[in-house]
Length: 393
Image (tube, rainbow, N blue to C red):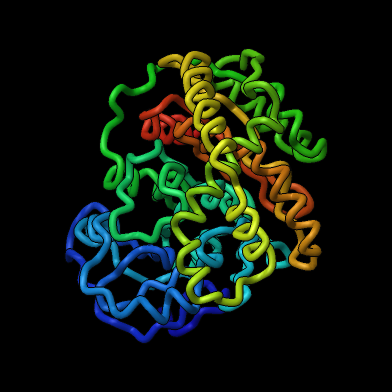
C-alpha cells in the first residue's frame, strides 16, 4: 500500500513485490484492486476479519489483475471493500470508511469503496471494483468517476471472492474517459457486435421518475448536450410490472445466492457483522425456494423484455443513482432507505446482465452526480466510445 494514504482507501497489508511488464499499453499508469481479487504475495480479506484470518497468502494472481500487470500497469495496493461486498454505503465496521475524494463530507458508496476513494483521491490512476447490485455504479456516481458494470461474464472474476455469482461483474473506475478507455482496450477488446454509428437514444421516463427532482434539474444540461450529439431521446418505459416487482425479484435472487456463498461461513463461525450487513444476511437466510423460482422466471422475462426494447441499436440515457451521495453523518436508517431507492434503478442492469456506464458529468451542492448509458448485451466498448464522443463534445 502507499506510504501515504490520507483517504484510508487501502488495506494496510505489508508490502509484497508485484511484478509488471516494463512496457505496454498501460505502462505509465498505476492501479489498485478491491480486496476481493487475489494478488500473489497478499491475503484476500473480502472486508471481513474472519475471511482474512482464513485466507493465507495467495500464490496466484487473479487473471484480470494479471492482464493489467502484463499490460504494464503498476500495482498500487489492495483497497478496502464493504464487508463481504454486501453493502452500498462504503462504511466497513471493521476496516473503516474510505474518504470520498470528490466530496469529503459524503459517503463513497460501496462495496467498491476503497477503489473509488483511491481514484477520486488521485492515489492511483484507475482501480478494479466489482458490481453485483451497484457496487461500481454507486461509488462512480458519488465520487465523480467513470465506472462500468460490464455485460455479465465479459470480464473474468476468476480468482475473486463471490457474492452472488449470477450478478457479480468486474468493473473499474477512472477520473477521465481517456484513461478509462485505455483500460477497456486491455480488458474488453472489441464488441461483437458493436453498436451502429447512429444509435437510437431512449429516455426511460419511469426511471427518471425515481430520481430526486433536484438531481434531474442538475442533469438537464447534460441531457441536452447528449441529445445534441446523438439526437433526441425517445420516451420509453423500462420496468416490467412495477419497480417494486423489479426490486423484490432482484433481492430474492441476489440474497439467495449471497446466503449460499457466505451463509455456511456465517453459521459456522458466527462472526460479528456490521450494521446493515448483519440484517441483510439474516433476511437472505429466510428467502424461500418459491420466491427464488418465481424470481428466476421474472428475470428471464425481463431480460427478453429489455433486449426487445433495445434491439441492436438502442441506448438508455438514465440517472445512475437517485441523487448525490448521502452525507457521512446520515443515519443507518437513512442510508438503508437511500439504498433501497437506488436498487430500483440499479437492478435494471443487474436483472438483465446488460452493460451500464456511469459518466461524471454533473454536480449539485458541490457533490458529483452521474448519468448513465445502458446498452444491449455486449455493447460495453461501444458505450465507452459514446462516452468519449460526449466528453469531447
